[in-house]
Amino acid sequence: MKRKPFVLIIRDGWGHNPDPNDDKNNTIKQAKVPVDDMLMSQYPHCLIHTSGEDVGLPAGTMGNSEVGHQNLGAGRIVDQETVRITKAMRDGSFFKNTEMLKLADYIKQNNGKLHLFGLCSDIGVHSILEHVYGILDFAKKNNLTKVYLHAFTDGRDSPPDSGKGYLAQIEAKMAEKGVGKIATIMGRFYAMDRDSRWDRVQRAYECLTQAKGGRAKSAQEAMQQSYDKKITDEFIEPVCIVDQNDQPLAKVEDGDGVIFFNFRGDRPREITRAFVDDAFTGFSRAVRPKTYYLCMTEYDATIPAPVVFRKPPKMKNIAADYFSQLGLTQFRCAETEKYAHVTFFFNDYTEKPFHGEDRQIVPSPKVRTYDLQPEMSAYEVCDVVMQKLETNQYDFIVINFANPDMVGHTGILEASIKAAEVVDSCVGKILDKIKQLGGAAVVTADHGNFEKMSDEDGNPFTSHTTGDVPLIVFDEQNKSRKLRDGGSLADVLPTMLEMMELPQPVEMTGKSLFAK
Image 1 (tube, rainbow, N blue to C red):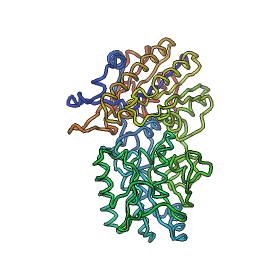
Image 2: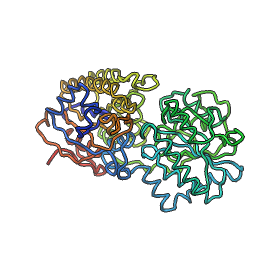
Image 3: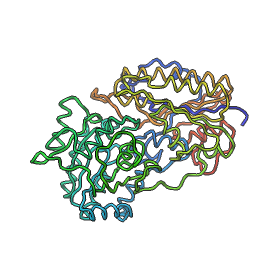
């Protein structure tokens, strides 16, 4: 390679919204982002797809950070877990799965209960309801009668008050199939933390194992109680559903079986460790039930629990692997919220760094929601990257700025404007340094989010979008070249290889975005 560094800057959640009717709630249109304006007016740019079949998801499914980073790091479209699980449920192989049958046997031998844990929305980022229904069918086929759903409500990838409707759909299916009851309800804020906020996870764990929490006579009553207090789905405090004697329907006890049905790995890890890890230190566990605890996918190779769907064999010649073979040096940086994305997911679910790959994590701020600190740790990420650029020791650098996504999820426009302006200034500093060093960068996103902050009725829009995202090539040597529209995240790495004048491995089936 004749020059360096080559830098991939991921503005996580920075999408493109062409609808002029959305301008007033489009963060990018409302913020002062002079660096982005300069990039879009002076450098080659295009729009790329980040959702549905273009990233290995079912058609129409919004993209997400895990899927996005895996596609970016692979340089090819990667079929996702949800597609494999759905196929197995539809072709019947799921019902013969060895781990599922072991789960059923354990429950029968111990006269135990089956507990379903997971996110109860149908958006397809972490879970889908078809998988819940498939597990209910499995329970019925195996004559498991004591079946309880512990519903983790969404309101982040789904509309903030859609949970009541989703739980009604699930209860209708339970009635139709004659199996299953909802036993507890809690917002993902508690049950699906991923940033070591153990006080939240402890509340979820104690509700699941000790029936600690609020009380309601039905799932619908529990949801309405929260809505009446202006608490939306994401933040619903743990609540137990009780029977006619005001006793909780179910808690997780010795001899029970658990299946966590989320297919995405980052958010089930903490609560799963609380159940299965002997060395767990997040909080003191008053009870530790002996269960058969089954994970739908491999959430983390170090979690000591069986898995229904193991990862397929590792892909060959992903970015990290290929650059390592060539003897090139790499650096990855993000704050806690997105650190796994630029390392574990970008490297095809590989925890250990490749030879020549260095990493630095910057702690995310400890605030309840990121509208309270929309700058998050962007300035600190920027400082770390600037220090590394100063040494000019790395050939390939990956940076993630979490703000557009994490602040976008709050649905609060004023905060997302601040987030955009902070990220824009940080990107500007980094690009100036790259230019000074004679390097080049690609600026893009893994999916959209904060370009749409409210829906048609003026309600907060807190989820990802399914639209395209901008991609800009910041490279003085390629400044006059044109890029093609219609590409996807799989095409980003091949584009960078062309900039680096490196051959593209045959396994990378993405295509360079430079117009031929």
